[in-house]
Image (cartoon, rainbow over the protein chains, first blue to last red):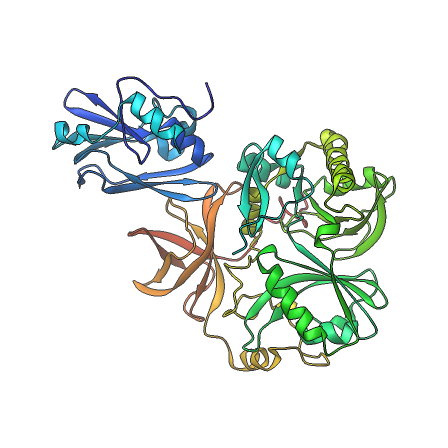
Length: 132
Length: 381
């Protein structure tokens, strides 16, 4: 597989290169392999506090790489219920394992069905990144 | 904007080994593997950079020194043959057109090395001003490959390539020598805070022969440098090393509306010079009456990374803005340079940086940001 093209079946994807994984009534969010590969060395991750209520596509944090700062956007509306504290000391986990240990935040969605419809599936996201 | 990008002689090598991006009108390598690894190679071993995008003017003639003194702020008459210095070129308001290194290579001949982004502007300026003097300005940018060799092992590598001890050449000197059989000027300068040199590889025009000579030299640096842990380094680590050293960058700390006194590169400015350079009177006035903005360094106390244009606050009042920021791989902290109102803060004071609406604490610091006893040209450990 080409570097930076890994996608996982069963996840939902945004065109802002975030992924969302539905786990019961909570959704886990991170950035995609394509995103981490484009950013390269991730040096810092900051996510809005637990308890923050967000609209879909609202800015909710930032990722710093050696070269630039990029905003994070939530693909789903809801309330942040947990952030990945491990990234504070080890932001490189996002590069190493973007769909696993590099997850970023968990959200209690307020419009799950509606927001998911606006996202891409694995195939749709692969086609989208291939077109970039 | 010219949409046709200029190509360094080493372009195909860069494309085969790294990520090439458009930069200041050129196609240049951003990174080969990892910006942090390249950065640490420069601090701990030796890194090599293709800097062929910098413009290289050869300026010669009976009035060369006089001409250069009218367009640059350091004391040209103090330059001895084989000497060099860092200097600036100003506009009439004292703002910085460009910063440059100037070397004297013969009684009446100098090399002017200047930023890629300002090359076209400086070409126009020099040709216009030179019309009043018996002087010739030749742009040899495309004739010469330029490579920076930087790091604590840089001089060991260069001695090996020269077959003689070149480590005794003083800082800012410029000497015509042979390295691995190639004629070059070795300039004892750099932009990383480390020991090393910038090499002008002569007779390497942008054709097949010039390209193969440039690639042969580059590969010789890598082969001979293997024992020292050499790495090819791109623009990413060029920027991160210069920031960690506290060096200024055009478009960030240096602009047409910033003077060298405001940018705190006072060593590039002399007042006992004849004739007076363009912008002299404004600088003289600032020297006597003070400035309205001044450059400071910042090290993050809180987590976070400063970036250009972020506001800097002290006691909840805006006192300035970040001009450059990033993360220091040595400190593992965010660092930045900023312009603030003079007299508001001193070294050691705590300020706040508005990072996209989140206020984060930082300490006012001098530079370099690394411990100079452990890293950099003057290291003792």
